[in-house]
Length: 135
Ligand SMILES: [Zn+2]
Image (cartoon, rainbow, N blue to C red; front, side):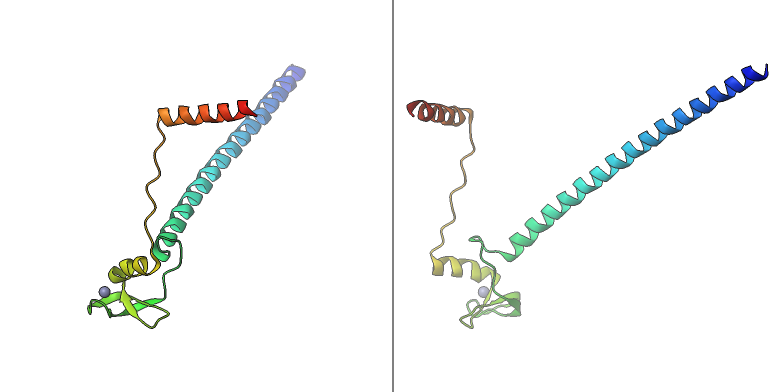
């Protein structure tokens, strides 16, 4: 009788240890998934933040905008919150600066990249195949 009780007690202890191990493993997996999700979210926000910063501080050709402050534009004569101070000591507002630097440096916006269609993809693949068969 006592031996049977002890055996049942031992089985319950084993069951409890197994259940605790399963619960611990499940908890670890859930915490890992939560952390992976938070890391993914953080990296996504950081990427968006960098893109926004880059777009705000760089011209279309990738160069930095000159230092800026509020003031009066020398080209249009209006009071603006953003006036760029050029190295040539000119003070030009954002609206006048864009065409100004493009005209000065002869910048032409690059054409939009062509979106690949099935036909262009097949042509590219055929071109690669022909090139590899020639050699
Ligand atoms: Zn202006």
